[in-house]
Structure formats: structure tokens, C-alpha cells
Length: 608
Image 1 (tube, rainbow, N blue to C red):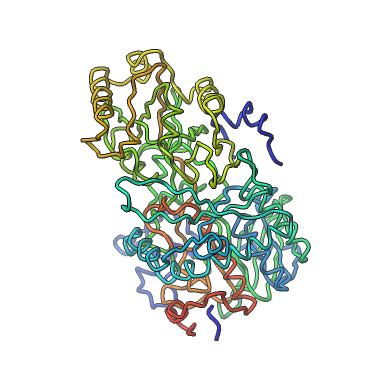
Image 2: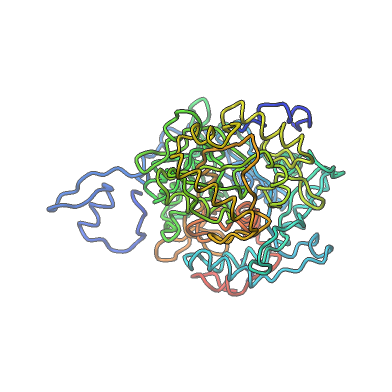
């Protein structure tokens, strides 16, 4: 049995993108017998007090069926719900393997967001002589998740992601594109404290220019959609899935969706419905109920607005068990802005975050960080998740980044990598993706792309003296001046005696003009969903498979816990696309490129 529209360089430099603005109730308990109190609780979503149920609404309350409002039906082998990266990859593989496939997408276009893909043992890496210890990576990711992850899913990803890249490159080359691996790794001090393998793969348009290349999903998704159409695949846009159809055995046999005109259509499936709806980062009520408190500390939620948790909720209504251990997980960058008098972007325990649409892309640069008291509070050189969490522990849950006129020299020295890179480097991906994702080649570009437009927009504060800057920031002057004086003293010594930041990332703030940005988190996505087995089939609380259904990408859990492992650039994207690729193979009875015996044997009813 088997195991299972390009921007010109000139328009980018002068355009708005450079300024920083962008784009059954409860968790069902399966078939276990219920007490009367439990039964009342599950039916009402409320608490039982003195024998009476107290109503309490939940995002998992199952709505009334719309089956009687269906006006027409259509038949497919597989319907993929969601036109993001994972949905398009899964649909393309299905169509190329011969399945009659339909994508239904709630918006008017498929996503061209993101594009870096982490992988181990791709042919590109092998050709470059790059060797990565997969078991070391697996253990590190399990450790990063505190063990509250499904090691089988991580191991299956680790052993198959390289083969996915080989397939992905083959698809890109059919359309005159190609895939590169970023070989420029972050420097660590002392050396050897972190194993940072070159593993970030990105699609690009040959020939690769020194800078200003269109890359990633912005070119890959259109190419894959062309290939999908050539394989006979179909797409319905502005169509939102609302209800799964199940037979008497519980098998999913289709999905009901609503068109933009309000019509309900039932799409029947001979093989399965694949849910790839992108998590629930755009549903603040669901994040609250699922314990994703960190969204409250993010001033920006760009990229997650259309992810409402529809796939996860439909799977739960069909009987799937939620990924409880990881339900607070999310992917956050430290680049959200707080500007003007906007009440701190809505952040804080009493807020919901996401009120400020601005980003400051160099927010991840390890310049001095101070809190609302004007105090330095951390080693600024940590990964995004760690420095964000450290800042959330500070008064107001935000921080200030401070730097001076020598910032170009500083960022060249810092040598940050992956999507925090702002300086072009040979062997590194250089692109226009998301506007600010732009490696500069000179101080003039740095000034024109990042500094001047953001001063004009209010993202950056600028002052001729440090005292004037502190007044503009509204920080306690004496305390903040003392912090900067201490920081400059340490920079002069070349040794960070306080937080032990690497010497080449410790630079004085002593040359005007001076700059500051008030920052919070940027929520990119949630990372938890429903429990699945190694075929990405949802499981009930008892471990039974819900046949005819797949949950892929951000709709399934078990891969992450707590926060995203930021040093593995492109891991989230990779997990999303590899899961849908493998799920498609399982549906078409194709053996995985690298069958993982332990994963196949770890779940009920699916042994190798």
C-alpha cells in the first residue's frame, strides 16, 4: 500500500509602494456517548448551570443548512476551495494527473502573495553542493514547537520538499521561468551558534538581473494557472464555499458555494473536496476564541484579510478535531507601523490590532530598540518572532527603532537575509515583491526608496538633533538620552556588555539627522487548523478519517506551535504547497516521492 504585472524599477522607486503602504457547534467530539449536560453544551455552545444551558455564541456554531436553496449542481472529481498558493499547486497537480478539477475562489483573482519556499535536497541545492541534515532540521522544528506538533507531518515535509522543488522548477521552466536558491546566509556571532542552511527557493524570470527582478508567486501563480487551464482545470471566482455535503457514512461528497449573485451551487465530488482557504488571520473573533492573542499586538494585518477560517470551520462541522495544542500559533513580522495619533494601531489587550495600514520594511534591521520608557530592552538581533515577543512584554506592547544618518553603512554591515534583506548581494534573491521587498545597491537608492518617502508619509520621524527626535517621539528625555549614551559607549568599545549583540551589528547613533519609527507586529497568517493524518485527511477526536475531504496549507494544524520558526525562510509557504501537492497525489493514488514509513504507520487505518 502506498504512503500516503511587473513593476519597472523607476515606477517602484517613485511609486506609492515604496512609502510603506500595501494588499456542529464547538469542536465536535465525534461519536463518543454524551451526558445530558454535555449534550446541552454541544447543542448550545454555552455553559450548563443548574441543569439549564446558558447560551454562548461561538465561531464554531454550525449555521442552518442551505441545501434546500441550491439552484443547480455540477460534478467534478475534486473541488479545491481557495485560490492561494496551496490551492493552486494542489489543483495543478490534480489536473495534470487527470482529475476533473475546479477551484472556487471567494475573491476576483488568485493570490500572488509571498513566494519563498524552504526545502531540503532539491536538485538545485545538490548541483550547488549544498547538503542539509534533514533529521537535525526535524528535531529543531519539533524543539521550536515545544513538542506540541505532529513530528510525522514535519518529517514527511522534510523528506519530500526537495522533490516538490524539482517538480515546481519543471513547471516554471515550461513557461520560460526558473527557480533559484538563495545562497547568502545570515552571519552569526559567535560562529556556529545556529545552523542556517541555504534553503530558500524562489521563482524568477531569467536572466537574473543584479536587482529589480519580479519573483516568487507574482510570476509563479500566473504561470501555474496557465498550466492548470492547459490541463483542463476550471476556476470559479467570486464564489464562496459555505457548506460541505456528506452522505450517511459521513463521507464528504461535495460542497455548496454561493456565487457573487447570491446563487447557491452544489458541486458534487467523486474523489474529494480539498480545503485550502488560508487559515483565519482575517477573522478577529475566531482568533480571539482560538487564543491567538498576539494579533492584538499587531498594528497591521495585511495579507490575512481574506482568510476567515471558512475551511477550518467547515471541517469542524463535518466532524474534524481541532489542533488544540497549536491553536494560538501565528506568523508575525516586526514591521507594523504606528503613525500619528492612531491610538497605537489599535493594539493592546483591549483592542483588536490591525488599524494601521503602514509597513516599515527595514523594521527587522537590528538598530537600537527602546520601549515607551526610553529603555533598551533586548538584543535587537533576534529573529522576528523573538524580538516581537520581547516587545509585547513592554509597556504599551510596542517599541521604537532609532538610527542616524549612517544607516546605509549600518545595513550593509548588518547583512540580514531572506525577506529582511535591504541590500543587494550576489547569490541572493533580489525582487520587487510586495513593493518594499527591495534590495538597494547604493546609498542613493536606500535614501530614495526607504528614507525620504517614509519621512514624507509619517512612517519615519526625522530630526536634526537627538533631543528634538526624543521630543517628537514623546519619550522621557533624560532616560532616553541615557540609553542612547550607553549604547554609543558600547558601540565605541565594540562590545555589547549589556545584551551581547554581535559587534558588527552594534553601531553608534551620533550623526544627524536622526530617525525613529514606532513599531508593532505585522500579522501575516495563523498557523493552526484541524488535525490530519499523513494524507492530509482530517481526523475526528477518536482518530477516524473523514473520507472525501482534504485540509491543506493553513487549514490543517500539527506543523507549528506558538510562533513561526523565522530562521527557516519560506517554511510556511513550503509547508502549504507541499501538503497540497502530496494530498493531490494521495487522491490520485500516486506514491509520494519519498514515502515515510513512520508517518504512514502513525495513524489509524493507513499503514504502509
